Amino acid sequence: MNKLTEHRVTQGLTVRQLAEVSKVSPTTINRLEMGKIKSHPVTIGRLAKALNIPLAELTEFIAVESPKMSGRKLLNSAAA
Image 1 (tube, one colour):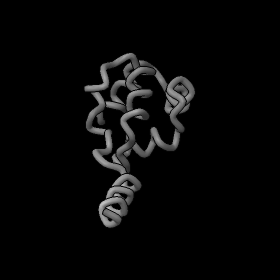
Image 2 (cartoon, rainbow, N blue to C red; image 1 turned 90 degrees about the vertical axis):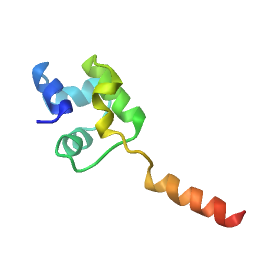
Image 3 (cartoon, rainbow, N blue to C red; image 1 turned 120 degrees about the horizontal axis):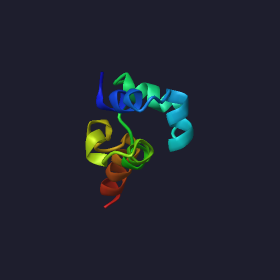
Image 4 (tube, one colour; image 1 turned 180 degrees about the vertical axis):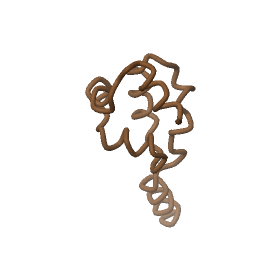
C-alpha cells in the first residue's frame, strides 16, 4: 500500500470522497494509487491538503516534468 492509499484509508475515505474534497478526479486518484501515473504538483498539493498532511508525504507522486513542457522547451530551443 502506498502513502496516498494509506492516508486515505486511515482517514476512512473512499476514493470518491477524497475526489470530492480535493477536487481531483477519482480516475486520477485511482491511477496514482495504482502507480500508473505521476501528477502535477498542484494536483498532489490538493490531495495533501484534503488529507491534512504535508506535501512532503506525497512527493513520490509528483511528475518531475510533464511531456507537454518538454515539447515546449524543445520547440523553443530549436527556434533560438
